Structures are given as C-alpha cells and as structure tokens.
Length: 392
Ligand SMILES: CC(C)(COP(=O)(O)OP(=O)(O)OC[C@H]1O[C@@H](n2cnc3c(N)ncnc32)[C@H](O)[C@@H]1OP(=O)(O)O)[C@@H](O)C(=O)NCCC(=O)NCCS
Image (cartoon, rainbow, N blue to C red):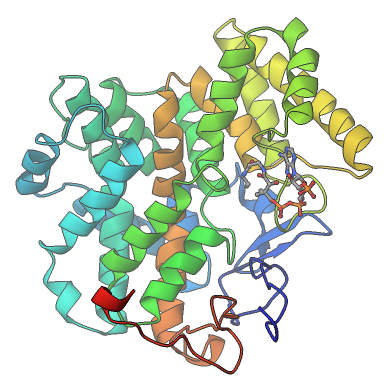
C-alpha cells in the first residue's frame, strides 16, 4: 500500500458538481427552494399540477396555461394494456419500488420519443412519466391484492385520482388536499441521491425513461426515500408511547439508526417536516387514532435528546419522519410510502433531466466521469506480474 493516497470516502458532501436553476437546499438556514419559491410558500397554496408546471417551465402558470397543462396530464394518465399484462406476471410479493423501476423501463418500449434526442421529446417523455407513474403504483397495489386495476378518472385532480385508483373511492376534499400537499412537498430537492442518479444517466444522453428508472432505484434505498417506510415500521415495532424512550436508547446503544432523523445537507429541521407534522396530527384526530402522531412527537424529542447525549451534537428531523404516520393515517400500505415519494419526485427528476441535457446557460451538458483513488494491490508504480493458471 506504500505510496497510496488516503481514502476519499466523502460521498461528494459539499462538492458542487453542476449549476442548476431547478431548486436549492440551504441546509444551514433550512430553506428549500423550487425555481425561486420557498416550499412553505407553495405548500397548501398551489396544486401539485402547478408545481409540476413551475418545475418544468420555470414559472407559475396563468389560469389557462394550467388548464391546458392539466388536460395534457390527464390525457396521458392511462398506461398501455401490455404494461398491465406484464405487471400481472410479477410475483405478488415483489417490492413495489422494484415493480415501479421495472415498469418505468417497460414504458420506454411504447414510446417513440425515446428515439429522439430533443428538448421537445424530453418534455413529452417527462410529462408522460409524471402522468403515468401514479397509475402504475395504484395498478400494482390492486393487482397484488387480486383486484382489477381502475381506469384513471379524468374529472379528478392528480392527487385525488391517485387515491381513487388505489382505493376505488373518491377522497373528500380534505384528504385529497393533504395528499396534494404531500406531493408538492416531495416534488424537488436539488442534487439528492436519486436526482443525481437521474442526471448522471441523462448526462450520457440516455433517454428520460432510463434516467428516471435509475432515479427510482436510487430512491428505494432506506437511507434515501426508503426511510419513510422504515419510520412507520419503527413506529409499529415500538407499539406505544410509553415504549419510545427505551426503544431509542437501546437502538442508539446498539449502533442503530433512528429513521427520519438526520440529513446529509440540513443542519436544522427540514422545513417540510414542520408542514407534514400538523397534517399528521389532524389526520390522527380525524380518524380518532392520535397514537401514531403522538408517538412520532415523543420519538422526535427523545431521539434528538439521546443523540445529543451520545454524540455531543444536534440531529434534526427530516421529511420522512412525519410523512410516515400521515400516509398510514391515509390508509396507504406501508410499502407504498416510497413509491408515493417517487410519484411526486418524478417532477423534479424530469426537470433536472431536461436541464442536464438541454439546460443552455443553466448547465453545460457534460458527461459525468469522476475519478477514484486506486488503493488495490500494487497501487504504487509497479503492476502485478501475470501468472498463467497452471503456474499459480
Ligand atoms: C441521512 C443520513 C444517511 C445522513 O448521514 P450523514 O451525512 O453521514 O450524517 P452526519 O454526517 O450528520 O452524521 C454522521 C454520524 O451521525 C450518525 N447518525 C446520523 N443520522 C443518524 C440517525 N438517524 N440515527 C442515529 N445516528 C445517526 C451516524 O451514524 C454517524 O455517526 P458516526 O460519526 O459515529 O459514524 C443519516 O442521517 C441517516 O442514516 N438517517 C436515517 C435515514 C433517513 O432518515 N434517511 C432519509 C434522509 S432524507
């Protein structure tokens, strides 16, 4: 190992790898920005469809622009029957994120836009994926539960239509509104792992479906989007408010990780958590089961205290912490929490892929190709001498 450089396992923390106009996270101030707007100024005030328009077209739409855009999204909600037939062949216990990733790649076979490398084709593919991913997630949940997938309802909003396709009942305004806000809050988050994955694939000039399939795979991991599922599993595992403190202490003393706490960028609470928490509280009251919200509150407090005691520094709550109990209150299966993250984040991925490939002044299209420090055998000036099989 003589002559080798120290290991550079930085996870790219703090490195700026590109310029972007799509969004920004100021981890110190706890600010999340979509195209110049603070997320808390958008959440609850604009629909997910408006946010998608903002992310794709760099400004909020006028009324008629939004109406036309809605029509476009609605007209793209259906998926090819061949795709549904393919989903029906998948083992029923497959992981929903794996199904979503495979279905994203399968969708490419049906779209001639994959053969055209142009901004127009990239926008069309992005819009198709934004419209179709909810249909795939809902269809898969019904197929694995031996139910027939439902056709999208063109009269319903993006959020309400997803809940309808999932459950077979039209949600009331409060429920649809909360879900819509969840989609808004998860739409974009600058160069997080899955967006970087999507952009990295897009930098090779691979098409939108390839880039998004990579994003879905990246999001599935429990240190990224998969954390919301893990938070709910943790709450179910703890079971009651009185067991939270002992659980937290034991977890940290045995080297475990409290899901939903900590972040690679935020050095304060994630602003989205403060919007999700009151919605979780409200949903708990609405269905007369405040326990999961109350446990989350105590878990946040005890988790922060126990972490500080052990590490001598603060840890903060992230987006996945309160979305878990909120989705659970909405009656959504725990293993669908991360696919739901994906049906929101597809809007950010699409905007980033378009910027990566055709960003003009915002980003110089370039093939990502980082370097690594080789620390294997003979990392110095000499190479291994090759020895043929019978002489080894
Ligand atoms: C997101 C995450 C991977 C960021 O990791 P990171 O950038 O390495 O975090 P930091 O540099 O701030 O902290 C690293 C240290 O804190 C610990 N730490 C970070 N988050 C922790 C958590 N939630 N529970 C317990 N310990 C945690 C790490 O184990 C590490 O300890 P060490 O220094 O003794 O090795 C990490 O906080 C985590 O695993 N959180 C839980 C999963 C989660 O919620 N992910 C969704 C993120 S939106």
